[in-house]
Amino acid sequence: MAFAAPLAAQEEDVPGAPPDMPTPSPEVGVAPEPEGGRPSLDQLFAELGQPEQMGWQRIEDAIWIEWSRSGSASMDLLLKQGRDALEAEDYDLAIEHLTALTDHAPDFAEGFNARATAFFQLDEYGLALEDIRRTLELNPRHFAALTGLAVVLEQMGDEARALTAYQKVLEIHPHRPNVKEAVERLEFTVMGKRI
Image (cartoon, rainbow, N blue to C red; front, top):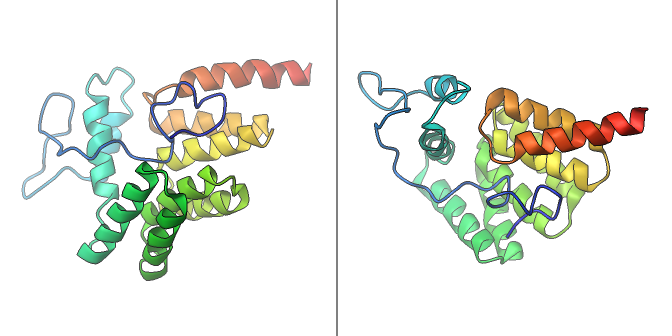
């Protein structure tokens, strides 16, 4: 499953979808845990933003794990069911689970992000954009939602705004797969249209 856009052929999966959810390990490249628990999202993003960060994938995985915690076991189950349905390409079922999640946990950004992915897969760009907007309202550092926004905008032919969204992704996550290439490609295209 992948977004149908020039980035899609290179992207590891759907830009708004998380990787398989590993357990983060305290290996090289991951911010050390503060006394009393896991590193904070601020610590993880500080580490992720380092241009020479070799352990960025583990840091990204740790961020996804944090983003996937709603604080409620039943909401976490709805997210898992929605993601499982996305993986099975049953987008209608995914939307059903994720709508239940967003209805019951309207401040949980990951429910909106996952549902945006399902809407995109059904070519419901307006609904996908609305869920991306809500995701970014709740979590402005959501690099996957920003990547999804860029893909949708590019798919709709709005290359200048897609370029801006991709550039914002790189400000947050300079290691995001294929985003640098998308920026270079769109810079060339957008500059060519301006000439």
